[in-house]
Length: 121
Image 1 (cartoon, rainbow, N blue to C red):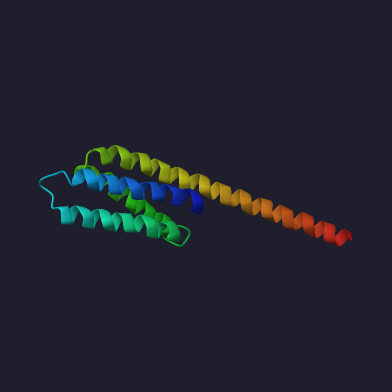
Image 2: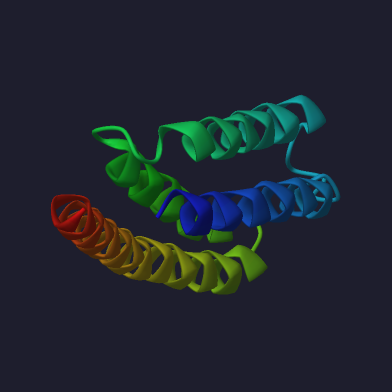
């Protein structure tokens, strides 16, 4: 799960940076505000890469997804990209857990079969 979720978060890191460049063109927004908000969001993307397997990591990832969709208020294209990345986040979590379960089953089977051969010798 960690690999899939981290890949999604790194993609979001770049999307947030590009959204900051777009938001910078809005004359109603202060550049310092834009880059503070984008910097915090980009920081959370990177930090969550390491925290996604810890308790609450996936929930924080969902909070980030909601924030990215809400960023569409400032940069309308973020509605589309936020929903797209929320779907990718769901797929990363869902299929990542299935992959982790399959790896655990294969490891248990391998341990059981190697234990059988050790008993036979």
